[in-house]
Each structure stands twice: as structure tokens, then as C-alpha cells.
Amino acid sequence: MTDKGRDFGDHSWIQAELQDSFDEELEMELDDHRISRELRQIASLKHKSTVDRRTYFHELLRLQAELVKLQDWVVHNKVKLLVVFEGRDAAGKGGVIKRVTQRLNPRVCKVVALPAPSEREKHQWYFQRYVSNLPTAGEIVLFDRSWYNRAGVERVMGFATPEQVEEFFNDVTEFERMLVRSGIRLVKYWFSITDQEQQLRFMMRIHDPIKQWKLSPMDLQSRIRWEDYTKVKEEMLERTNIPEAPWSIVEGNDKKRARLNCIHHLLQQLPYEEVPHETVHLPDRVFNPEYERKVLPQELYVPDIY
Image 1 (cartoon, rainbow, N blue to C red):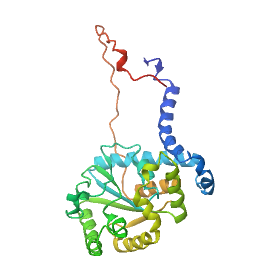
Image 2 (image 1 turned 180 degrees about the horizontal axis):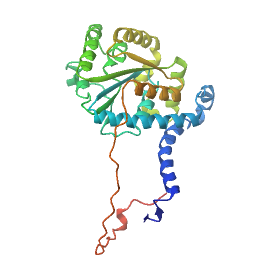
Image 3 (image 1 turned 180 degrees about the vertical axis):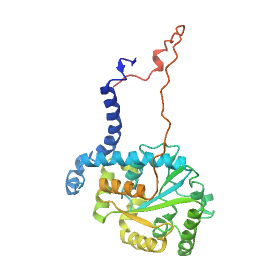
């Protein structure tokens, strides 16, 4: 059977489909290497990944295949999985989240990145807006920053009073124990990078129009207050590292290694196994000899520019 001249039994067509899948990751990867003229000198200071490109792609696709198995297991067993991503600005959280979700069903795996609280939310129970985004049975939810904003940016920037911060520390460990007791599997990651690496990544964002949206006023303040963030981070990790929900630190200076290490670690946290599936057979198309496909007006089509 053919469709527009393609032979579905032709290995070249299958190879092209696999190549398209590979190119999805390659497009994101090339973004890391597309730099403006002003950044040539800065980029020369950046270290190269210790993972060669062939190994990186091979391992990433292998791990993503395992994530699909994890997803199927979560749905099949009605597991509630919550993964919290915290860390320094520009530490690579977003890059890992993209690679985790890239091959997964968005109806099963959801990303939560909440904006600053509204006036109404400011007067609610602090954890309330996060609770409404927790996973239900058969769901994976990734928090791109979480309730730990109170122990970090809100504390450093003075958006929360010392009393509110202390109240948070008194409540958060019991809150997380409650989540675990309710059946939620909670995994927490802290992404760590060096002072110099963060500076280089911020400079990339300043000079790259495509990445400037990533640079917020809070990011600029995080540079000024690097040591303040370090102090509150250390206290946060010490006071909230509980057996029911321990922290795992991801070294983020090498983006490729960080992505592979984090995904591998996440997979190790769950006793997932491959879920058996019924064999799927593509049914034959029904042909009606009396049906004639209508010719649609040309103006309905997107212009064929490329």
C-alpha cells in the first residue's frame, strides 16, 4: 500500500521517521551552540561536556524509552508521582524537564510552573495553590519550582517576613509527610552550579534574543545576592531533608551529564516494570467506490513556502 508515493514497507521511510524523532532533540541541542558574535569570547571560556555527543544521544534516547515504560506503569498502577525541581537560576532545571517530558503523553505527565501569587492567593494558606496542582492517580506532575520559593527567593528578596519563613519550615516537613502518607511518591531535586557558570549562562541570555525572555529581574538580583542565596539554600536543605522526602543534588555545570544523571536517578526511585500491552493491528481502510474527495479552495491551505 502506498500513500503519496511512499511505500510503508520501505525501510527508507521508517528510517526517515526515526530521523525525525532524533531531530527533535537535535533542534534543542543546537540551541545551546547558537551564539551571537558578542559571545564568542565568553563561549571560549566555557568548558566542553565530558560526554561525547554520540554517547549523549544514545543514552538520552535509551533513558527516554525507559521514561515511557515508567509512564505506562504509573497509569497502569494508578501511581501518583510528584517531582520537585529546585535550584539556582540558570542551573538547567528547564532543560531536564524538557527532556523528561519530550516523549511522554502530556495528559499523563504535566509541568507546573506557577507565576507570582495573585492578591487573593497571597492571603490563602501558603500551600493551597500548590495543592490544587498535585497529581491524581495515574499522573506524573513536575514542579518547575515549588513551595520552596518561600525558603529561597521570597526569603532573600524580603517578600516573606522572618515569621512567615519560620512558619514555613515548621509546616513543610509535615506537609510533605502528609503527601507521602496520602500515596504520593515525592522526589525532590536541587540543581547546583558554580558562580562562574551561572554568570556565563546569564550573559548568554542577555546577548541572545531568543533566550532573553528567560532573564527576569529576579535572576539579576540572584547574581547580586549569590551569597545570600547560598546561605538560605544550605539551611533549607538541612531543615527539609527528611527520610520520607529526601533531597537529591544534581551537579549542573555540565548540562549533558546533568540531564542524563537526573533522568537515570529518577528512574531508580520507582520500582516500575514494563506493562504488557495487547498487540495493536492497524485495520484496513474502508474504500467506498462511490465516494469522491472534494477539491477544497486553494486559499484554505497554508502557503507552501518551504
